[in-house]
Amino acid sequence: MPAKQTKGNVKKSRPAPARRRATIASRSDRHDLYQRAVQDVKAEIDFIDKWFKRITGRLPARLREDFCGTGNTSCEFARRRPGNSAVGFDIDQPTLDWGTQNNLPKIPESARMRVKLVNCNVLTPVPAGRRADVVLACNFSYWIFKERDLMVRYFREVHRSLVKDGVMFLDACGGWETFKAHRESRPERGFTYTWQQASFNPITHECQCYIHFKFKDGSAMPRAFSYNWRIYSLPEIREMLLEAGFRHVTIYWEGDDGQGGGNGIFLPATTGEDCPSFIVWISAEK
Image (cartoon, rainbow, N blue to C red):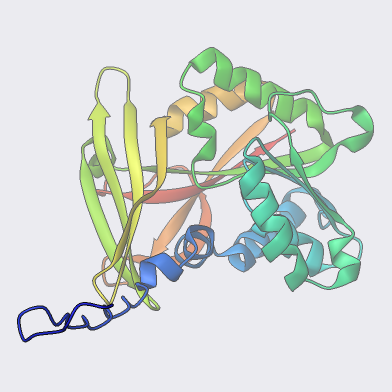
């Protein structure tokens, strides 16, 4: 027989715990956030088209995107004109897979067929039949080569991989704030983007950097991306490109918006403003 229930042994049911609502951070994708906060692929291809045509007299048709990550820029290049094709090189397969699943479906099928995202080391020699009009290395990704000899080797491989009138485009940053630990944040649509240079070694110019994301519900995605680089100066980059065989190197300096910021217009320059931070474009002509 079941025990007689008395006032002392009646079991009270506990209310079910409330379900925790998923945070914005837990529902967000770091690659999507990166593309929204860091990349402007339309402006990148606009710049490449403009200056490649001024240098060579024609528009580029074959792009090689080094350290391509999700291949976002490659997709934009292939989408831009029917005759354009792009190949992106990266050694992180999950990131390439993300680009294949998320970026390629956003462009027309005809353009999709002209994009290849390849798990490949950028130091690997490229067959002559696959030479590109343009090789692109953006977001300071090439700074992963912290030894000068290795960087020159990379630039030589790029030089070999270009057609006769090919051009390499890359970006760089500088200014005295670059040579110290610092953090800067800016609001984006739906989140806050933070770039942190956590450390800087003045002897080796090696730095450790992170990208963090924070959301309006207070949740965060700390260290969503991590980079360990050597910061190279503009004179060093120019000298290494010339040593690798490029015949002419141009620095493109950003104009002033009149309020202390950049106006997004980059023009060839031989002198620049002594400012705390800057970003430049660089072209190297074969």
